[in-house]
Image (tube, rainbow, N blue to C red; front, side, top):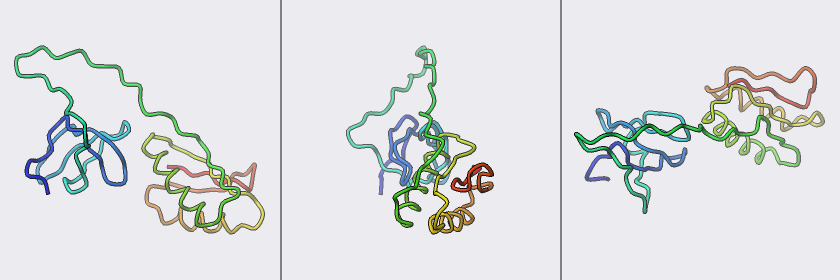
Amino acid sequence: MRLMPFAPGDLVHVAALGKGTVREARNGERYLVEVKGRSLVVTGGQLTMQAGTKKLARPKSGAASRPPQEYEGPPTPPASLDLHGNTVAEALEAVIAFLNSALLSGASEVRLIHGRSGGKIKAALHAQLKGMRSIRSIRVDPANAGVTIVEL
């Protein structure tokens, strides 16, 4: 438990998402945090202060603020994930990490390459994707039955 709340400019770690910067402190121990180019509201319980990091400098009242720096944006993740050679459990774990990365980067569509033969990975993959709220639609690529197209 923290004695002092987080403040704008604090470098923090958001549980399950990674490093970020507090942009706003809101009511009820809620904070607007920027993680990998995305802004999200989290509770104070989901945040931990980054060890060995300093706060970002905030201009003092009356001081001239520095010009804004150009934002390069998050790195673009690959548009597809090849699941060949994985067990079903390994494939499902890899897909979750891949989809999280794609969502944080702002991707609208990704392709999951599972192959045509057997269908164990494909069946497990489709079952998992149907239960995820962040997935808008899934469909098998009409040009290649070994690829599932996921719309985020």
